[in-house]
Image (cartoon, rainbow, N blue to C red; front, side, top):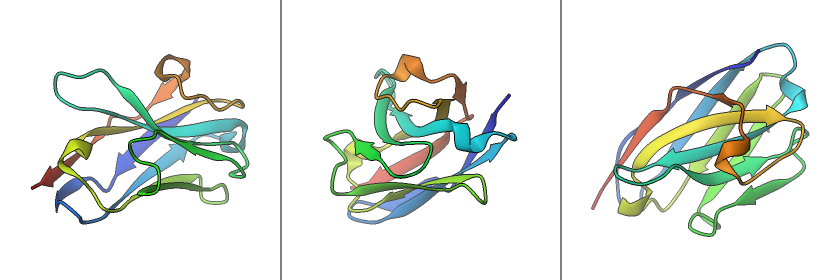
Length: 123
C-alpha cells in the first residue's frame, strides 16, 4: 500500500514559481513510477509530468514542457514538481500519483493518489 501526501500549493502571481512536494509513505517507493496530474474546475484531470522509478527518465505534457521540472529523491521518499513561469491556465488542483514500475501519461493508469493541493495563479 502507498500513501501520498502533497504540499506546497498556494497563490502566486503569473510569471512566478512554486515547488510542490509529495511525501510517499510505503516501503517500496523505488518500485513506483510517479507523476503529477492536475484538474482545473470544469475540466478533466490531465497528466502534467512523470518520472520513472529510478528518476532517470522524465516526461512532460506539452503545456508545461520547459517550465516545469519533476524530480524524486528515493532516499527521502519524496517527489517534487518545480513550476516556473506560471500562467493563469496552470491554476488547478495538483495531484501526486503512483503506479507500479512502468511510467505512463494516462491518468487512468495510476493506482495511488494524494488528496491534492491547490495552485492558484493570479494574472
